[in-house]
Length: 299
Image 1: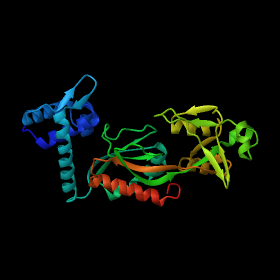
Image 2: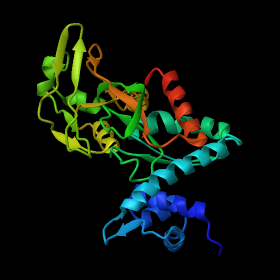
Image 3: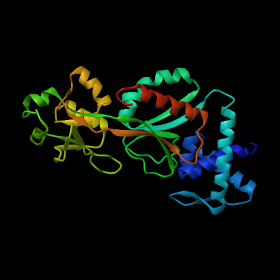
Image 4: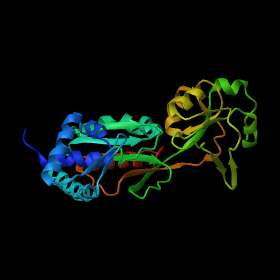
């Protein structure tokens, strides 16, 4: 088989970005043996060692790091040149919090698929904050402040919250007519899986402010499990309005203390600073941004 320098460059760049041959092979959809052969061919062609290999990680040599910068820029320019002559096509890997995925993006995907039939989405939904560069993710919708200086962050919306409980819980619980009644209730806490920190919610009504600081009766680090606990009648929970909507409509949950305004969490669209957006990634980011801006629960 003839040596394909461009494919070898793509393989090398992905190895540097994800830190392993196996991860690069999975991201590119080729066997690991193919990746190994491409790197051997590229190093032989260049006459230099590009990668340090250990049992736990692969990292670029000094020459490899310099070669990566040039190869990445060249491949980005080539992808942009080719995509400008065609409709958006190819795979886009995107990550997002579960409430954003289930409450906004996934229900609207038939529209995206109709507009961009040649774009294949690989969507991850969860509470884990992924490393976009290391894991080969093209872009992400992320909640909360974005402190990573290697990422471009574009504010696109807000995740609004509400306090809810199951009718079965409220029927047997103490009276709940004011925020001062909350300490007498079972409050369910949510913990961010990545940091182990509990989400602390504040309520606002005019000039009044109340912070829910009581010790939770139970804590969860999965959005699905957290909502399930509330529906099961285990206590009061604080969830995104978009996630609560279907349960409020069905009567499985009811909103409590609705005259108080709960704080919201900013949602940003993020992507690696050093990576130029291809037409396929731009197609998704523009579509998702417009979708969020058009929805009153998120804009």
